[in-house]
Image 1 (spheres, rainbow, N blue to C red):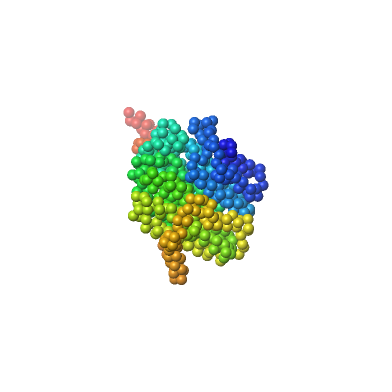
Image 2: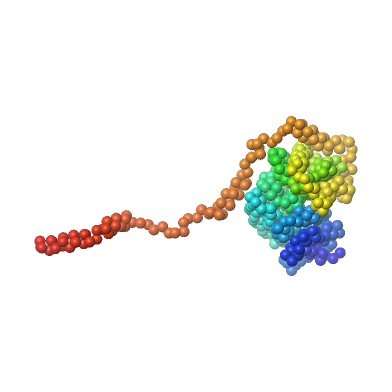
Length: 549
């Protein structure tokens, strides 16, 4: 297979975006074809393509199994998302604008995955991040504008931090841009902090998650699916690619990063349970799941010897979460506009429970692998928190499904088959993945003993019992908890006000007035009304003075 095929991966979506205004509005149904070269290369990778005409060290291709799996799940999600969105936008007057942003974000996302050098990764990352703003604000109105403004502010901040970290990293590597060369170059604390925050703002783990709960509910369902499933994981992939594999600094930071990951996993659930909209609940679920991916990263930095196994786990966990969460966001979009039959609602439970570790699913397989990695790592004493996390995740996804079910009372029409089909396929993926991926299948077989099945099943059972009890009691989220303040939104609005009305000094110069000038003006006004009389008085006084002399 020719290495030149790598050019088609990011360039084909760009060519489609450039030709949008020359195509019919309904041509969006065929834009999914743009990802076929990427899907083909994820299955049968070609040799890496060197592009010295761009810059020294420019190279595109897949260098490991992690990149191959990452490209595979990303292309599947973008493909099915494109088919779903083509029916969702049939009557949208701004469909071309949506597709332009969609294709630019798609091109950037695919480019950063196949990038073997830092400059290509950064270009793809920036293109994806900035184009996603158009997806967030597409529906228009106050809420999308607020969400888009906060997203753009943090995206630009993240780009600045990332660029600064990239420049420092290039300096540390002696001017080399190849990501493979960076794996043996030590990391300075400032560079590590800049990269961690810059990529973390995109990944959305706590406490850098503040844009996620606003952006996902504001965007169309297909955009939310790729935002949560593919785009935010670019931050995780960036941390993996840019950070060295055996660095003392990262080893010392490992326990703190594991703590942040666990906090994100549990706080994301706690905040999500207070929400009353399905897509907001799912957004906080993404915050929680990003915490688990951060844990895997931290374990890989702490135990470099287990890096190959943890790289595989990272790719499998990201694949599982991306496709399951994409199905849930599309299901929330369908539930908001159409009536779903009971069979469809049961279908929605498959990706929902898979996120919580449903046995015999992709979720059960990756949860088993994560527990094994945690048990063998330096934080083995914290293993019970992962079980608590499974219980919390199950409670959260059941609440999301319940909120989607509540929307059905307001709908009467059924979803068109063309829009329902890609969503249904995504719902079935958690059951199919273990049989398509050998490493996940091995983990599934290792969870078949009764004790292992019970360890995966009892958190789901307990969450279901708690949900039934709360439903029978008619419990509702207390009103004060539904109106918690959002400091990030307040700061965003404050920044907007400062930009629109900057506190600048007045442009007109101030003159310093002397006191005698006020007296002069006073006497001028006094004599102005008595000009004739005062003139006669002065003349008479002079005549009298001359007669006396």
